[in-house]
Every structure is written in structure tokens, then in C-alpha cells.
Length: 233
Image (tube, rainbow, N blue to C red; front, side):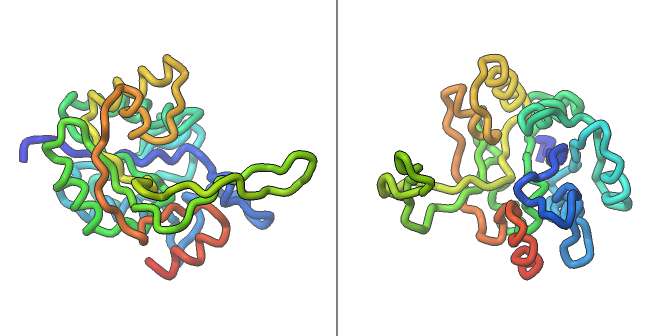
């Protein structure tokens, strides 16, 4: 295989929704079964030997990541994090200075449950795709659109939304490095809404491929998610 494959883990934020009254520790450093979540996440990526390197992008003021990741092979920690996820990923791409045709997998620091089978499926499927793709799960539940009722402090159903064709985006999201960097730069310059890497690619008029992910690969978002993730690991 001639294409270089690296992974980027944006880890410059704190995970505001996961904070509780008992801790202000950034969620990527919270312990899961005695080990920091970030270390679990990086090890999940290292499980596929085709990934040449995992580059963890942290805030320039971060003092924890280097120790948390100590001893892990093929892993570097870079202080190139920015004010948003998109700025952090862009900073990591610029810092890595990759060939345009290198393949980049961007993975959430808060998805430590990524199974090797799902990771390998994404790489196998998107290795020769000119656009790239992402892990995702078809929406299984009935979807309700909600809103505040006029004059009341009550969120109520506005309508039921068809779930046909709806998918829940996961990570990793895998794209050619040059394409992804151009997409994020363009989106930020034009004030586009970039919620994940695929959304930046979509703003270029391209259609990323959907690859079936895994329930285990959920994102640790709320305080109660930590206990659930511990049961999977």
C-alpha cells in the first residue's frame, strides 16, 4: 500500500456537557476503568497497523496529554489546537504538512469504544474513494422535532420527522489530506457551519461515503455516558 495514512485526534476542548459539579477535568482526561479516555481512544486507532501515526492536537496550554500518552507507539502530541474543532483539525493538518494524497482519519477524543472491525471497514471502503467517507449509523428511533410553546416554558413536539435516509454521524472520518485542508479553509473563510469534517467536504459540493459504524462507537457526551462506556471497554 503506497498511500500514507495518519490519524488526527482533536483534543483541545474540555467537553462542557460532560462536566459535573464534582469535577472540572476535561473529559478526555477522565478515567474509564482506571485509564484516561484519551489513551483508550488513541489505542483504538493504533489497533489497525495501516495507520502510520496518530497525531493528537491539544491546546498550547495543555500540560496533561504528553504524560497521558507516554509510551504509546506511533503517537505524537502537538500543541496546535484552536478555538473550535475545525480550527484544531486545520491546525493539525498544517502542522503535519502531509502530501495532498495522504489519507487522514479524524477521530473524536470522546469515542474510545471504536471497534477494530469498524475502523478497518472504513479504511477498506474508503482507501480508493476519491472523496472519502465516515462511519455512521442509520437512525433507529422515531424522530421528533421539538420547540418551545409560545408563552410557556415547555418544550413540545412540533412534528414527527421521517427517519428514512437519516444517519447518525460518527468518527473516524477519512479524507485525502489536501482535499480536507482545502475544504476546512474554504468553509472557515466563507463563514460556513462546520460541525464535522464531512460537513466541510459537503460545502464543496461533494458527497462523502457512509460506512456502517458501531453502537459501541458512541460519543461520551453526558455525565452518565462514562458509566455506560466503562461497560463496553
